View 1: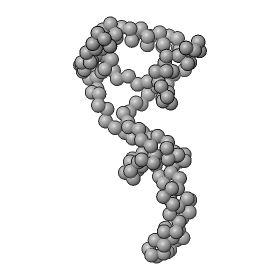
View 2: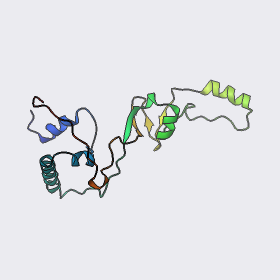
View 3: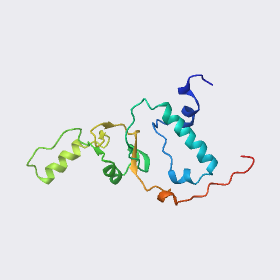
Length: 157
């Protein structure tokens, strides 16, 4: 094991993901035993105190989502994610053409493998992963009234 703290257990826990944050459900944490909650709060307090000198955002906007590769998205999902495909590679047909002439132009210029762009204008790689909004399956903590029973662990676990 490395002596560098950035290569330690937290790095390993995140695995191969590129996640920059760990989001924890309040309802699930409040459903854990009191002893666990005390240990968790102690660790969170220790973390906060250790980095009081580092400027932090005031709040975060966390939303449930599902992850998809750009190449696997349906047209409706692309639209939902604000992704546009440039099937004509930046070219536009001349103005004033008939529908028949436009169809002919499209036939010769259309490239389904043309680039795709995010709503921010960044070109996306077909293998790039994007998020689509989803419903959070964990209920809201409801001012501390939501309880979800943790799984019972066997002594062998």
